[in-house]
Amino acid sequence: MKAIAFACVHLGGRRVEFSTKDCLYRGSTFRMTNSRIADIFDEIADLLEFQGSNPFRVRAYRNGARIIRDLPESIHTVLADDSRKLTDLEGIGKDLAEKIQTLVETGALKQHQELLEQVPATVLDIMRVPGLGPKKAALLYKELNIATLEQLKAACEAEQVRQLKGFGAKTEQTILHGISIAAAANERIYWAEADSVATEIRELLGTCSSIEQLEFAGSYRRGKETVGDLDVLVVSQDVSEVMQRLGEYSDLAEVIGRGDTKMSIRTHKGLQIDLRVVPAESFGAALQYFTGSKDHNVAIRGLAKQRGLKINEYGVYRIDGDKEVYVAGATEEAVYATLDLPCFPPELREARREFEWAAKGELPELISIKDIRGDLHMHTTATDGRASLEEMVAAARERGLSYIAITDHSQRVSMARGLNAARLLAQWAEIDAFNKRLGKEFTVLKGIECDILEAGGMDLPDDVLAEADWVLASVHYGQQQSREQITQRILDAIENPWVTAIAHPTGRILNRREAYEVDIDAVFAAAAEHGKLLELNANPARLDLHDVHCAAAKSHGIPIVINTDAHSIDGLDCMRYGILQARRAGLTKEDIANTRTLPQLRSLIRKGRSKT
Image (cartoon, rainbow, N blue to C red; front, side, top):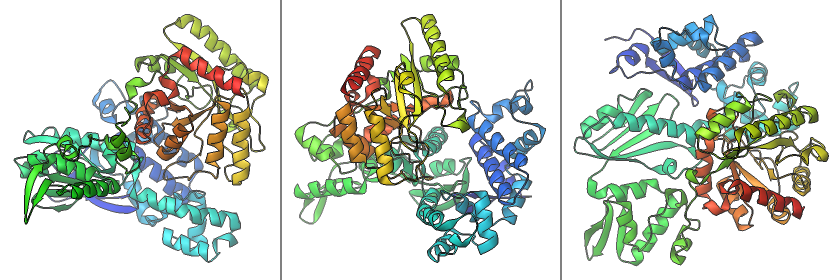
């Protein structure tokens, strides 16, 4: 069947052409997901803003993207229900509804294709440089003919960008620093995004009856915060059937290569998926080898060599003269056992301390999500959240939690309608009344995410903060200040008796913004001295503190609190990403504050206040 139309989608710095007819009829596997629709709407908004289109039109697409991305059900479910219309969704008008319908039915949108033909695809990469956006990218393109990251870097180094109105030398240096972030965003995706793809692949291949074993490997299995590609290992007696099934993946953009035992594909977002079919006797060895990390495997091979063994992806072999005798390889446990080692949790395989722990018999029992009792950072409709107090409580109880803290923004975050003292005290009165109705089975703590002001000090007076059960201090503004300024602001907050914890302590956003300059060792020392907690923000775009810092905090005896920073009911499910990060840091249940019972947590809070 001949293709009747072609879609040209720019994703991950690439333009991918595919036949909409092929998408519709290739084994009936094409499926336009909520995420893909939202991505296209976001890209349309970027392109329209780049062209200087009507701001209201741009905003409509951005709102549409947010609504579709946050929709708790598949858009296909809505379309399949004759009693429902897309326009029933708040914020989706007739025009967007028609475009969503077109995307679902054809896999492409004419307007999107036309915009991509009018604007160089690489310009979208420039928009993702921290400090830039569609408007500034358009000015760079118009005035300096800059259309790629390479051209932008050259122009900054030649000090041409600072000559443009609204830029300047400092902005030029910020852009130069942020180019690497934009480039990295094209190469690696959030672990959470990779997990979504892995789930789809697992479900797809799960329908293949010839598959006997299936596991994912690589940085995804080790839980790294960003993932460059996906490695899939399977045992099957029918290689052809397995590869054919992978070729039916709904998000397949191209088949990169297909051999006797390996097949590589690329998704529309540019993620490469490598499928390897291995024999059963090699499955454990292959899983260990392709999980990595490289440094961990180098150490393993060194230990093997000392014992006259050889380890590779095919198995463990004893060297007997010119011969190699197979010893083990069917399971990872058997591979590690040949070296008298435990089967390390994948998250620990970074050649940091895992071998030291194993030698001492002190391999930690890592934190798991079942250990979490509470979530102490979330927002409601009082500021920029999308669910009410009652809805967040109900959702938390459904997830098995026994307490939460409501921590809406303080007044400095005006764009989120931050709370002043009067509104905050009114919210806390509401929480007090709500707790009386809840009884003893569940407790809502009166909290606040209070900004640390640019000039120092807290955004709300001490007499108000003194009435809180839980105070998170955070830096949202002035992130370009000097290392000394930002560090002192955080140290002052730690010394405030009513502050309980520092939220997302380094301010980074993965693939978008690097951490602000801060003396993290000074922060650790002060937190330990004053009995304050540090947050591991579980939002997959933050994961702040990162794993190395979490391990360092543990060495200082600082309790870590893993919070979701949820702005919606679904946001509460981000807890699992924070757990994964904590496991990479080697943290146990005892290292995490919100694994404690509520009386134990209150005792920890009082201890911090008494120390300050």
